[in-house]
Image: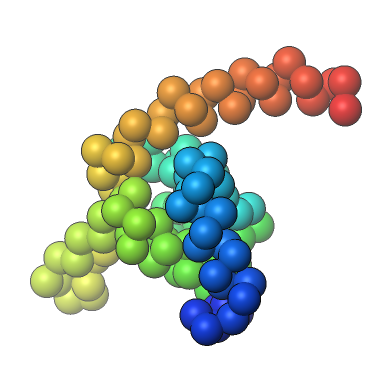
Length: 118
């Protein structure tokens, strides 16, 4: 997953669009192949990295790490490290993250209704 140069026209266009269109802003935060499945998994409560990986067996560890960092940066989830040996790390949705629950459920309902049509 490569980063877009902040000096590029592409970056400027994405920023301008996100500032003008709230739907684009939202999809920049929760868009991507794995963000919603991670959030869906965390709706039931705190999970450790390995537990998330078990729920989403097709995601690579690298991609899971990148998505968790992105969601943490965007304040959708929190990462808590316990000072134990071996270290224990738990991920949990923030209040902002839990606000996605009805949206995720509606997307699920939409998919149930339209999946057979497409």
